[in-house]
Image 1 (spheres, rainbow over the protein chains, first blue to last red):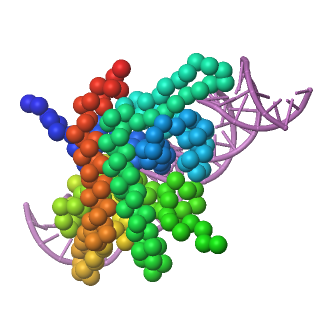
Image 2: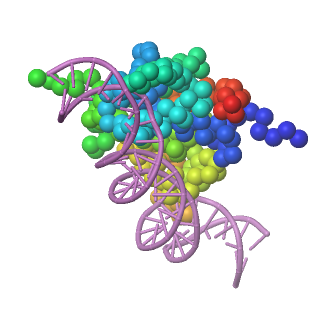
Amino acid sequence: MAKDLTPDVLNDRCPSRQVLNHVTSRWGVLVLIALQDGTLRFSALRRRIGGVSERMLTQSLRLLEEDGFVRRTAHPVVPPHVEYDLTPLGVEVAAKVHALAACIEDNLAQIMAQRAE
Amino acid sequence: MAKDLTPDVLNDRCPSRQVLNHVTSRWGVLVLIALQDGTLRFSALRRRIGGVSERMLTQSLRLLEEDGFVRRTAHPVVPPHVEYDLTPLGVEVAAKVHALAACIEDNLAQIMAQRAE
DNA sequence: TTTCATACTTACAAATATGTGGGTACTTCC
DNA sequence: GGAAGTACCCACATATTTGTAAGTATGAAA
């Protein structure tokens, strides 16, 4: 009677799809890639990722934190000092995301040429 | 004087980011994964990907076609017969996307547990 | 003393993504 | 004869995402 034993993103009802959406979201992808190089503070992360608003960065970080990809460490000082880094699982997915991005970067010339046709 | 010699998704102005968005879009991801198993017709693709509307499937396919990841082959018969499959470049990115999805599927239990906390 | 930086939050507005329902021109199956 | 399937497109409506601007408490630098 057990349904959906194995997760499947092609299945409408599988919760894996939601997680995939977080990871592949516009800014989620970039956060994971940016954190690959190590721990970063909020503002540093924001400067690193061209074009993010504070709002979107916060939101993306929250989602990735909830899913267990990113770890947030707040030092209770004033002015605030908060650090973000990847969890072991986060390192895994970040690697995959980065591989994808790198693949696109490597073939960008070809892609742009194709588009022009 | 040459700027932006190497593509970089973290750079706001780099066109690679747009391509990345197409590939990581809600349905784009699933189209690439679904086409990994081989050629599929429009309706078959739609049945394969739970929850897509015709409109979104069409739009996603167009974008992926423009970027050179998907190939569309229309046979001029009535009723229409159109086939979709991956280009060599499409096979590459689909593999990366699939690896990412598989990674999430494999760790879904852990992720869901983390979320519940 | 005014400004800047930190790491956010909130309200509001705008942009983008997505869904819905209808139409098309046929053919085949029942 | 009627229904269903094919691969879409179009107009319209709604949902979701994203951006903008302002506010917060405080310390340090100019």
